[in-house]
Length: 421
Ligand SMILES: Cc1cc2nc3c(=O)[nH]c(=O)nc-3n(C[C@H](O)[C@H](O)[C@H](O)COP(=O)(O)OP(=O)(O)OC[C@H]3O[C@@H](n4cnc5c(N)ncnc54)[C@H](O)[C@@H]3O)c2cc1C
Image (tube, rainbow, N blue to C red):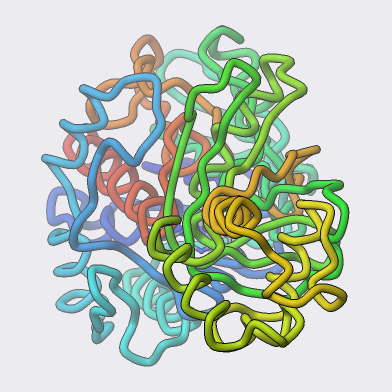
């Protein structure tokens, strides 16, 4: 059995764990102190390397706090007041040496490669003598007086004055994030501190006739989620992507998926995604349909509308109306049918049968409750023990929100640890 005493042991070498170690290394109060990262995988930053389709959308210049879910909106606001996007951009550019580039409000490394971000963190930790142990899963944390003992599946035992849980959530489990935080904190905290992890930012599935034939089609539009009692639970606009397995995805769909997960959790079996597949209001579409009927009355509907709609979209929507787009001419669509077609193109009710699981979701909802942590992510009744990143019950929409939470929570924990050692 090996043994060692560290000022801080960070469990998990993902975005939050790496950033926390880098922030500690940067702080002068912490000079000469010892940090260790224990990572279960064979390398650090596995999930970080996948972010932003391999480009890493690391933050956003226009973060709106309403776009986060958490159990403590007030604390979340104070966290972002203390450490936000400008602090992150400053650290990446001036300390880690990563040139950043804005795409609208989204910020990426100028290389357009997430490996640049992972490498910058790795190199900085190596320059600052932060130890990293790979391929060891932490299996337990115990506390005696003010020292923690951390055991791993490699039969190692290490001691630390401070411990940071940065084990992530449950999504993309092949990157190493398997929702270990509740298990690791079992003997140190109360179960009620955890909200069960669930997939968030995920795709939706449907058994609507004809939806599989839409696989690969992208429509710029709008999605609204409606439960059985008929009110709009969430809405978003952007590109809707029809998936191979008969469903919808894309950023705007992922952004409303939390509402679907919640409805299913509440036992609602009549969830609909109402899709605008045109990006325009129904009145405008109706005018366009009338003009086309004057110009191309003799053509079949799919051909007549092909200049304004993809054929698959016309076929899918007309199938829902019980009509065959290649078998009837536009002349045969009377005014009532024209109105119905316009309305369906702009508000197509798609029954939702489920949502993508942990292997498809980009982030988890749930985790250690923010309200049970102090302003620097320390568990309120357990001095020296911190929870950061996706392991905490904070999740946001797409667009750099989730990584910004990883950076913010990591920096806050590092601030307090560096002052306490
Ligand atoms: C495909 C995809 C794309 C994404 N794109 C973006 C994006 O562009 N912008 C954005 O803001 N967010 C994005 N996200 C979300 C973002 O990646 C996460 O929110 C972020 O990585 C969370 O960081 P974390 O450090 O808390 O957890 P993770 O990155 O999941 O890291 C946790 C680490 O802990 C390790 N670990 C777990 N348990 C143990 C244990 N018991 N012992 C030792 N080690 C352990 C794991 O191996 C893992 O390396 C994306 C997510 C996915 C899946």
